[in-house]
Length: 157
Image (cartoon, rainbow, N blue to C red; front, side, top):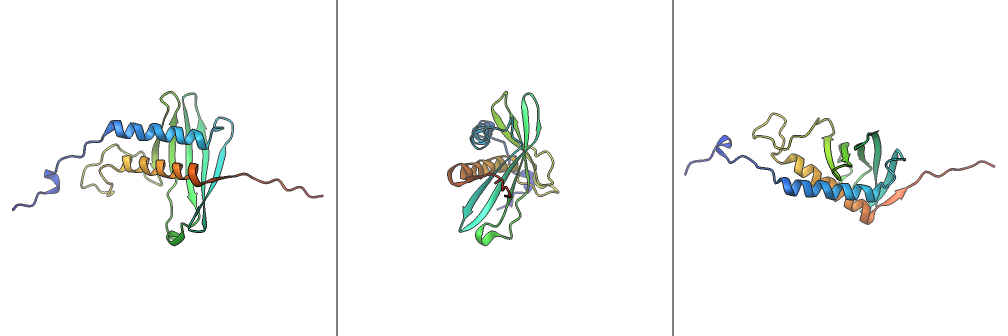
């Protein structure tokens, strides 16, 4: 039996309807978590995972007529995974389309919809889809289990 080479494999074909549904759901989740994105510059959440607090920060970077650019950062340990360093996600909210898309992950600029194998950066063929689904899971966790952190003003007497 012959081994099939990587070049002879079928090329990955994105499921655009599933990807768009994921991005549309992320837009709805983002609005639930950050309804005041047009006025406020940031929103912070705390998630407790295995008794360890993890913080999720949403920061508005730029507002335009039809788009809003938001950076999402996760800090703090995740129980036994405190060594895990979460990358910063750059997200674009497209208000005219009611959808949200991850643009960058850490230092990776502009994710492609599909990567050929092999590739120098070792991206998965469906990396963009995976990242948008992971964002959805994180936002859903913030909605279900997170609590908003608000700054406290302490006045001296």
